[in-house]
Image (cartoon, rainbow, N blue to C red):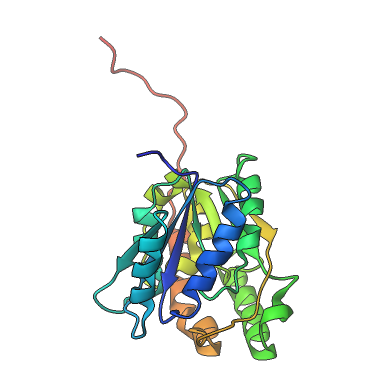
Length: 246
């Protein structure tokens, strides 16, 4: 089996109405641009018809693959399952609600082709287009707190629209909630990270899974874990070696 250029991994939780639109929007981008891609949809224990829709898309398009959890495990687990199943040269994560615009996919690939290891989307310039005031404000505060405590410069850590080289996946060890910190985890492994501006669309169907509680408080302990990991990171460098020859 040939290796696709891009694996698009999408965690899914109660997004039945959005999935056909997402698939259509992705195809309208990858087909005319000649992008060899696979779409991996991970159903995170949905209680609606998301899995039925995924099965219908698998039958309709051989580039679509479905993974179904026995029960709800959270976005980090669903992201990890998709990444582990990915076969592409490059791997991308994006949301199922169409707030991430598939039209930005070529820009991610163009950035990766410059040699950088990880490309993160940032909604800083477009955040007001798809979200209300509370979501915008809570996101900005959360980003400021994350950067302050983790000594980071990621402008939009809450945006999970990202792409990176396939080999980066092997170095990722994710725990619950740490999908937000994938760029930092990759930096800790010595990989290079950059950002590009992305479009932020309004949600058409379903309900947002994140609010003020998720952004500001629930992820705080995860942030402290990242801060601890960075402070305990091994930083030795070997100057020279001797012996071992015959």
